[in-house]
Amino acid sequence: MKRIVVLLIIVTTAPMSFGKVDLVTLPSRDMVQLTIYNSADMTLVRESRALTLKQGANKLQFSWANTLIDPTSLEMLPKADADKIDIADLTYPARVQNLGLWNIESGVSGKVPVEITYLTSGLTWRAFYMGTLTENEETMRLQGYVRVTNNSGEDYENAETRLIVGVVHLLDEIAELARRRYPYLRPGERVDWAKLEDTEKRLGIRAMKEGLRLDGLAAPKEIKKKGLSEYFLYTIEGTETIATGWSKRLLSFDTSEVPVINLYKYEQERYGNSVVRFLSFKNDSKHKLGETPIPGGMLKVYRAVDEAGHLAYAGESSFKYIPVDEDVELNLGAVGDIVVEPILMDYKTDEYRFRRGNIVGWDEIRTFKVKVKNTRDLGIKVEIKRNFGTEYWDISRSGEFGEYDKVDLNTVKFTLELEPRSSKEFEYVLRTYHGTREQDWRTGRQD
Image 1 (cartoon, one colour):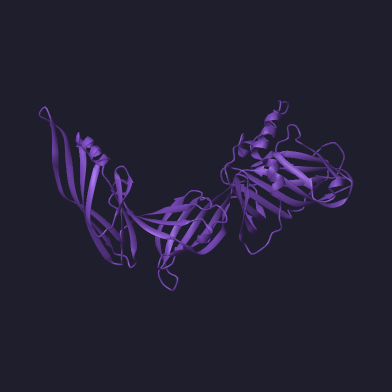
Image 2 (cartoon, rainbow, N blue to C red; image 1 turned 135 degrees about the vertical axis):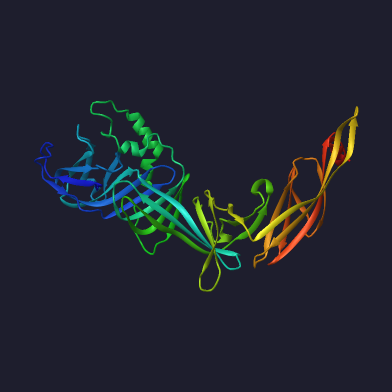
């Protein structure tokens, strides 16, 4: 059974004695904000609560039993009457586990709003996406979601959720700090304060606490995005209750009519005998995106097939972080409705060179026919790459393919466009040079 974080006010100035003090349960949170990193098991929690203080000395007890809160990151700040309230220190009683004690000197009595911040582990998020192509497959509705999973041991009711994209380098894992029996090692052990201070600097804890302020919560839900140095901050407006042991899906954005390019590729050395479908778009304003980077995740693509809204599955692909103004090309997998069939029609050798009765040079001549068939009810574009295994080659061609592009020293690319339910074919003759004929090829190129 989980234990919710307990904060209690001790309204007495007597020495600590848990059996005799009058403990008053703290009111529930007025507001809570979660800033969750995706590159490290770390979440910054900011909560607003109203403390009932008496004038003079007050003691506030904080328990984090059965949670993954890092007690060394706890901090409290008054949000009103700051000049009259002195939060003197936070102590950890010896031989008492999972318990901290704030000493507060107050010049006012009554309810005082405070903000409590700390780091916890066990909260994670990942992005995933749904793309719905129009019937002509020229544009796509792109919906982005995040799934937040809470295994921190603590329920967060009506929480504002913020997501950080960026890499954080940790000296100590938050989960490890949370599981220590004593926050600063065992009673009597020397604390390396320099390391603790360096850890705070490396984590940017103070920058996060000062920079990621609690804002008003508003509806309707939408995503707000903001750059923070090498990080990027996504704020999902509105609030959600994220209970421990549960995951919740949150909508991050919904953009319609994103222009896309469909391309089919064939390359035996890479994809075997299959034709693979690729979908590409750019994260820029022309494609109705481009305000912020897009976190990496999995995209499932569907196609609208009729006015009733029925969908056909087109494929899926994972992708990495997409910066602003960058293109992304997604591999949706092999398809069966586009067929490319290269056929070796003829093979022979020629132009032998001899030395002392041995063959030291020759040419290999291959004639290929390539058949391409489109069985779809849409026109398509196909890229066909052919790898020759040597950089010494010449090619002659004929048929319905236009020109070819040289990709690298031993690869060319043919690009064809096919009408719906149509086919094309072309031939090419490949001559490759071997042995001493390689020098002849080089000399011929220089001439």
